[in-house]
Image (cartoon, rainbow, N blue to C red; front, side, top):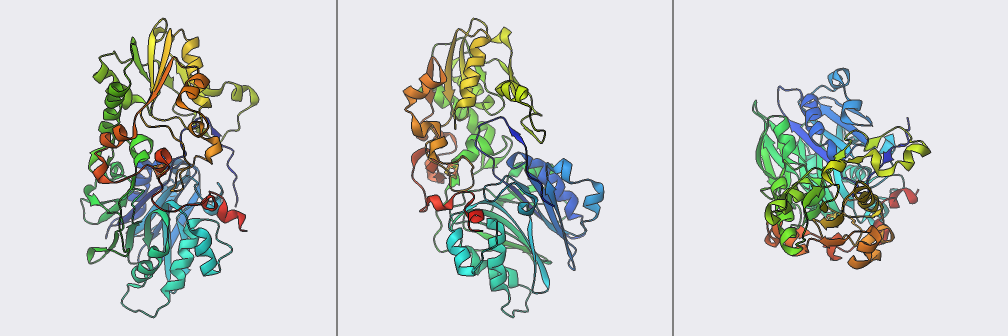
Length: 478
Ligand code: SF4
């Protein structure tokens, strides 16, 4: 079965990543718990959803294109028995948007079923594939499963074959990976040595453990936050509890700073910081760095709301809703007609002229990636009667492509890679434009001592990357 997505993407915000979730809960129904966890992680990927579950004897996997609510119902969940499982919501950063690439990836290897779900993007897939003589894997996840399979048949009989294979395979991987992996008796979570993508551990009220991309997913299943899985850490969960292993040599935490800007849910905590609070601080700092005389602060919903609140509080300029978001049209599998395409941004946002007319507006958004949506937005606010439009962006100019799991395309598609800030201001037809400084962003997110990746904003990549690491590299090998 192959479904090609015809989804309509109306925004130009960075492509989301993926959400991963894992459960080890003796005596409980893992698939139901996972489905709720995936609902909480839906914002990280809307292209496909999947669950693998095991009762200790067999492993069952179900995955399909679409939202969690479209993929799973009671009947499908009932067909996924067991106390142990993993789940995934996918946004394709490696491989096309087709059913075969949905996760969890699964292989039956050496008498056991192994399933893997991955958030991030590997940057050494060509070397890995060459080493494994693998010319068929279409995604990072399949390649990782093949690497695990190559190390699994070592004759161990203590039930720790998966754990041992992972300690050999994980150090060979480069790039970004937060993983949940399972066999029929163990749940494993791991983060790469830079910890680009988040992963946390929670405990369930009736016993058992949960791994999740974001803390907000723990809340939804009633789990208590225990701690973050650390950068470079591997946790193994089984009948004996939770064990921590350190399979990597050097560890250098570099959590993606864009998790704070855009990706993560506002009700999640990262590095112990509430994301909503961090976004408000970004807005406050922006008001201090780039003040402007204006009548009202208006957010671009929903991503610009906390920063606009912070800007308003710090500047004393009143906050007002000037744009309304249609929450249900952002991603649809309906092919738009040309007439609808021409409606452009109005399918997603519509102005409230009463709050804009005759006023000097500070329009606050979290980022500008390609720019044409922002340009339409400024025009729409002007047409609604705004006297002036001052754009304030709560992150620095986005100038370099991400190789660690965010889908923005190459530099030619990044507005700030092509134009200076003054040229962008003209292109967008704004009365003024200012971005938050990198220092201001990282201090708002808790301080540089915590360790952040900011490569897309600074050009300083924590690991060597090449254009060969681009999104469809694996497919082009085929
Ligand atoms: Fe995040 Fe940017 Fe680093 Fe990618 S390059 S991981 S988006 S900070």
